[in-house]
Image 1 (cartoon, rainbow, N blue to C red):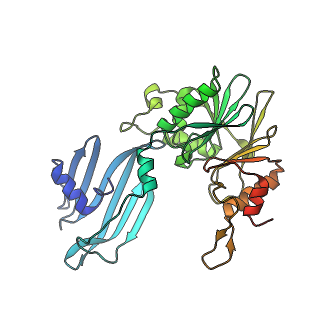
Image 2: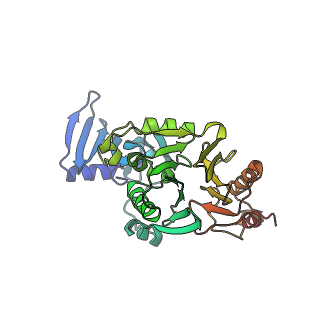
Image 3: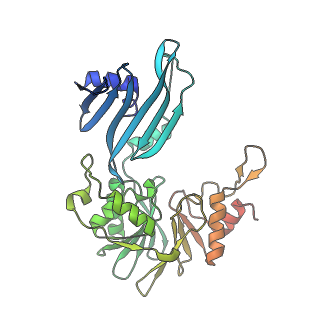
Length: 351
């Protein structure tokens, strides 16, 4: 799709996929072709310049998502006609706005796929369970994690990363680890797609989604969109999502035996509506994207020299102090290991 959303790529793909063309009232042409289930539509002006291309992709959060590319101000770059400005949008949101200053025809280019990416593309869904405390389990996989909490007659899961395939694998592992109980609640930390892509699978499972009100409004709007390209289980079942909003920055789930606190992570630049999950009895804090625990002891290096501390980590520590949380374990939803507040202080150059 990335290649076919360029002028040259679109024309080559149109020729290879039996495109149809229709004249437009301004002397141009609309060119349409299908590539499997994907439809591509391009507008070519009277000067034979590709002006606009749009297609649709299926995404876990937005469903059938419109992707548009616009090409403006064509120039002659040493015999190659090419746009000097390219604007790309996805789901109505700006993705790229590029100013083209030079064009070279057919240069030697080698862009190998990075080994980490190659492995990630080929790897099956991996789910590993690590016990954090009695009834509390870290459901790990690559760099995308969840946490499962065993309550008296139900299960609470924190975060549904990536997509339906991962959620189905996590749900199966959680039920094998904590048998004969339903997953009653799914706590969603925030609306970034790597943390929200698997939410709809839990709705189909019958879980109530616990999240900030602004996230609820976004999901309700996004989930009404068509899902014809990659229909998921919820699209087929048609179940109505249930939400429990985190009001005034705090929510509590309790079975009378274990309390689960949900706190808005205030003041972070990462996301305006993100929550942390705290288990007072176990002194466990579950957090997303503030500290991925890779650099336990090493400070970040400033490009102009000296020490630089990640502001997301600073904000995490400030929220721990603000909420007066007694934390023994910090559990990241990305990252290789749990950590302590002392380690966080050391990474922040406070000790």
